[in-house]
Amino acid sequence: MSEHDPSKLRRGWTTGACATAATKAAYTALLTGEFPDPVEITLPKGETPSFALALEERGEGFARAGIVKDAGDDPDVTHGATVISTVRLRTAGNGVTFRAGRGVGTVTRAGLPVPPGEPAINPVPRRMIEQAVAEVARDHGGDGEVEVEISIPGGEALAQKTMNPRLGIIGGLSVLGTTGIVRPFSCASWIASIHRGIDVANAAGQKHVVGATGSTSEDAVRRLYDLPDYAFLDMGDFAGGLLKYLRQHPVERLTLAGGFAKFVKLAQGALDLHSARSRVDFTALSQVLLKAGAPQDLAEKARHANTAKEVLDLARAEGIEVADIVAAEAKQAAKTILRGSPVDCEVLIVDRQGVMIGKAGFDANA
Image 1: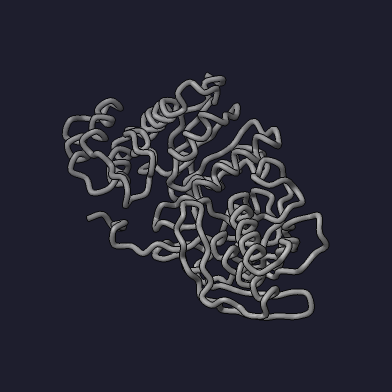
Image 2 (image 1 turned 45 degrees about the horizontal axis):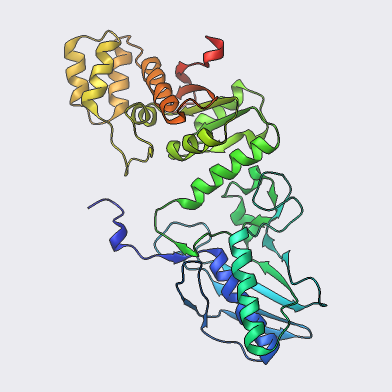
């Protein structure tokens, strides 16, 4: 069984699903005087989950409901946050309008699914909310002309743990979700953030982007290049998610930066570089050492090593610089995934102190 067996993990609900349920409860209370609790919604694929209310409030011309987000067993940054919808009646002619409340961000850059100036409430959650409003209006005699304000207390601080600041989403979190369901350890939201980062870079005309596996490697690249913050994509372990999207949405130059072990795995064909989801093939790595000029006994030690760092240390102690070869093979693996897309790629291997120990440069500089 894998470290995170999907069959044993509990799924959860997206911020978009929670916002939809809170909106349905608030609009129902606005029209009837009563909050449905629990409140049931219909997700895009037909599921009909129910949500308990954590907040109920009514006033002159508005109603407010809140739901505590349950992300199941996924390590979601918004797990436990309260998603609040305040619904206000508006004059006819505008349908449902959206507003960012406290803790929900506002879009400031082009390239995202909603235009600059709009609340960071993505298209699918907007449609879910609009459908819930239409359902309540039909059942209780409303006209569906409302303003929906979504807020997430503490969202400003939580957003600093996401890519929102780099994407130009200021003031808080995004309301996300394409299915309404959070599937544990699918990491779909992280990969979606990488994609949005590429979209923002392209919309801004940014020709050079960086995919780094962590902050140490990112800082090393910052010392090499004077690039805007939005050029740095928080790739993490999701090299495949980044490279596959760039295949369809190319930029001119891509710098990949990370540790030796991560890029050994990329060179060996792994698309997810996390230690729980891919492994170093030490037999193949021993062959790389031979290619670098290592003696047979050193290659044999590498074949029985416990970690890639152990192999690197053994090689460097013998004056064998294997990191350049790994960088070249990782670059070739990246180019294979890019499949001829016009992206000039370089790979930089960085040690734990932020020192560059291996490089395969841009083709244009060769």
